[in-house]
Image (cartoon, rainbow, N blue to C red):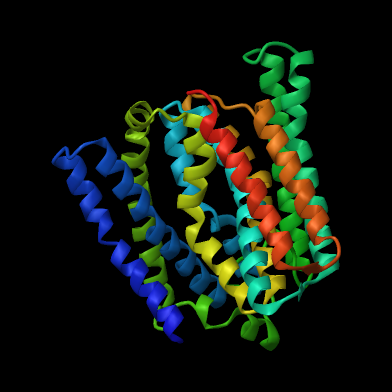
Length: 373
């Protein structure tokens, strides 16, 4: 393991100390801001441990089962946060986090990867065919999210049975498409819905070398130990998410920022920081193909799996959430996905294209921040 890997893991281990600090801040009533900040930062290493445990289990169970594990547990931390937010009735925050996750991956993560990778390595190449397939599937996923938002008004009011049926129907179809995508990925050598940062479905020697030591799972972890850390980290994410969501409303009032801004910017970053760092790191190592796959695969899983699953979870919790997004979210999604498709169409990237993607993300973030509470 190189020094960079050791340093990142040490930082992650240090951040774990924030877990008891966040609990202590809640018990001793230090205030909503310390609880909010400590719990948010504590989720980052816990999410990393969930991902690392999943990778070890995936490597031990073989390419097919491992690919399925990575595809379903890749966004576990963010899914837990949003489930707790649904229980608290923060539906706009949940829908904003779905939008923010997709935008964060295709604009910020991919943009930073192209920017830093291009500054170090010049023009970088990646699999144009694979990137094109992923981009097409991502466009289809965004269209599926747009249809209920744009056409529900022709059916009835937002709380009418017809609109609710439309949202549920679209969610079922999206999950079916996700399952078909996973099956396709398991039958083929590689596929977008099973690609995760550290474990490929059928890793060849070249692919293993491409992943590098940065994403190497703990070699000393057995399957039993991986299950233990997976369960422990999941419980930790649940507890920290409880504290985080419980302090959201006071923080919004105190800082004068909107629930929409917190959902679209902060929540996606908290749940996916570890994966984002992997994407940028491998791009700097001139492995742009892997970096592009990380960004697109995560976005596809959010759109085709997490979003529709949350619809059914919200029904079970008695706070039904519909797949109806506002105009700002739709415009941002369309712009982000189309720009990403254009940038990846030639199979090459450079630092200027990366800077452009990051610039679009920052412009959108500034707009979201300035929107009224």
